[in-house]
Image 1 (cartoon, rainbow, N blue to C red):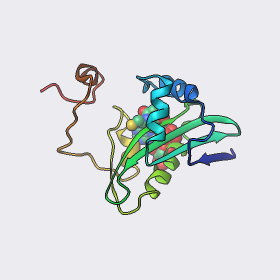
Image 2: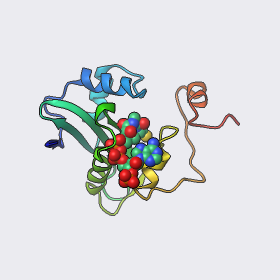
Image 3: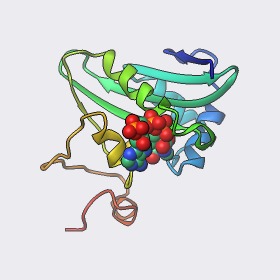
Image 4: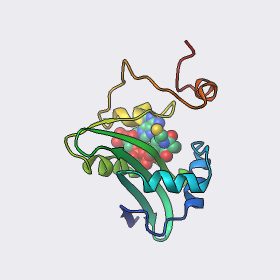
Length: 142
Ligand SMILES: CC(C)(COP(=O)(O)OP(=O)(O)OC[C@H]1O[C@@H](n2cnc3c(N)ncnc32)[C@H](O)[C@@H]1OP(=O)(O)O)[C@@H](O)C(=O)NCCC(=O)NCCS
């Protein structure tokens, strides 16, 4: 596979972003909100197989101390080829010396453990839809 890694939002189809996130169960908003999220991020990666968008990720950051990873996704047809790992590694390289945090989708923790992420003991989240996040296994109902 001859993949292209794009590091800006030029000519991205936000409908395709929404569609891919929908396929992997991660899209809760419309294409326009995805565009705003990616364009407001510190760093983005879009992966193309020729002209087909097959994966992406984004990172918000202050650039010097703290970074957070979001929307890491690979088209199921292309999973298992180290593309996800490459997306995360490339995003992290954009802010060397920073701490990196994320919340993994339930069942994906092992993917991040392989990248040397550790489980947080004191992570706290204020979600806009707490019931949904409890149902999906992201937070405890306590
Ligand atoms: C999670 C995801 C990004 C991984 O991308 P990928 O390209 O398939 O994964 P990679 O091929 O880069 O995997 C790298 C390593 O992690 C391992 N790995 C991948 N998914 C894993 C999982 N769910 N649990 C444990 N290990 C996993 C791989 O086996 C591989 O290990 P190896 O180096 O020993 O061979 C992809 O499965 C995906 O898009 N899933 C749906 C969306 C999602 O849940 N994203 C994460 C949001 S937090």
